[in-house]
Image 1 (cartoon, helix red, strand yellow):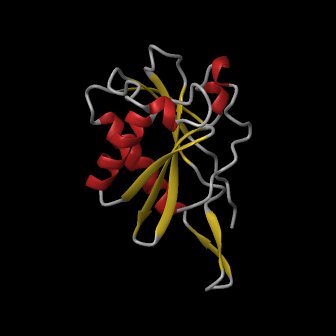
Image 2: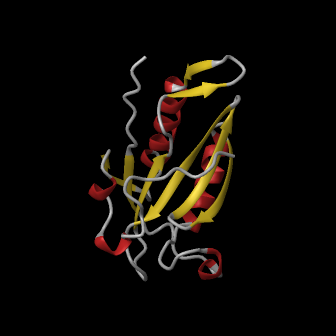
Length: 161
């Protein structure tokens, strides 16, 4: 099976996700804001039937996703500097459409679940009038600015929940 997976970074613009009180104490690296968007996605993804829990990471914010035994995660990167904090990049963090299954002793496709998660994520943004989807790109450099050089290239996915 061909594993033609590529991360898709959804760049959004919104005034809806300001820096949160105490967020500077939560973030690991300076400028890696996104707690408000993380909390928003936890709530919105739960409305779609996903279990979602977020936390700060050194590269941004992580939202762990779980639905019907499918586990994945969303990466949130602030791509504008304070005080603006209006532009963010969000992606489903996966290493491929297939994953090794020890119980089945072979790779199993997760393509349908990953594509559904991507579509659900995009619909959350598109259905909120306070959020503008600026672009979707498979190149993280296409949605970030030089101030965010802490975002690793290529992205290293954090551990699954």
